[in-house]
Image 1: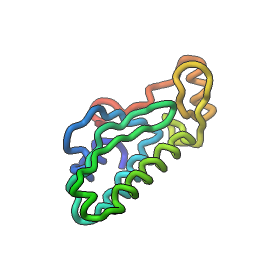
Image 2: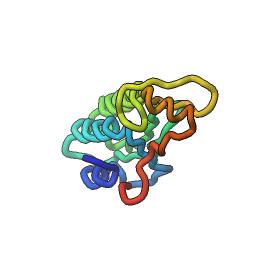
Image 3: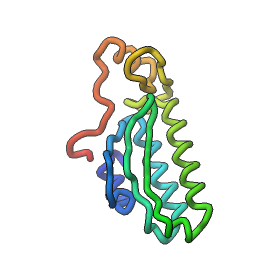
Image 4: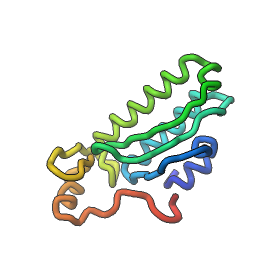
Length: 140
């Protein structure tokens, strides 16, 4: 899967429902796509009640927010805890991955916009020449 448009086609229920915003980083996209697949598997045959509310960057790493309806929790009391754990693991993993290219990186705590970047892209950010990390246009 190459972009958010393909991911949304594969798991349409995960993107149906009220949303705040959806901003997909190129470097973190494979982490998020795997999270979607893991949640799909965890939900089993009954996918009702789950959807993404927001995908963004915050404090240098990915931040994903979702809604899980009460009925979904009633089907399996552990499902909410499992999904929350997967979400946290995804966010922590993104802090060690370049937001642009997906190679190993780290959050630079210099003043300004915090973002996990590899050495190459950190140098570009410092020089003010970092390309956009976000998927845009027809890729969404």
